[in-house]
Length: 140
Image (tube, rainbow, N blue to C red; front, side, top):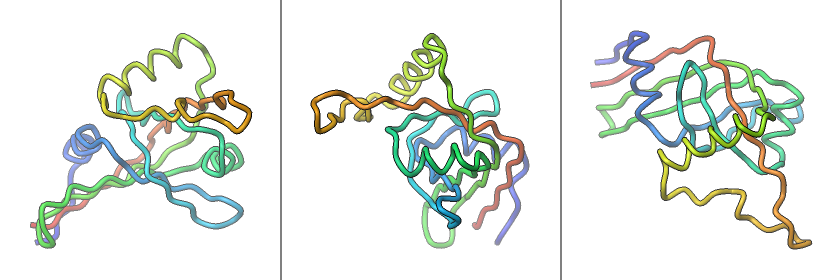
């Protein structure tokens, strides 16, 4: 049976998952990428190397996050969270967020370990999606 999740159930699912799909608009078209994240204080926190995802979010900061918990074809929960992209530039805040991400996801291979062609690590972008609306549905 298909049901709507209440706000608390939707937030619990968003808090409990580790991988989400981030939706944005890139070059006038929908663009979706998986991200590892941490949900705290109505914000989804993540990090990335520069690229199309970050360029799209800088150009149009409106974004959405989708998470799913699928137990079977007839038993699942899904949440969409909508909000605005914000880069985090302050060193102390960046370090705190990266520390929380790596504590929550200890097996995460940090994107900052990637090496650019010239042998230097590219700039790591730390960001949040400040959530202003959450919806959720479930089956089963």
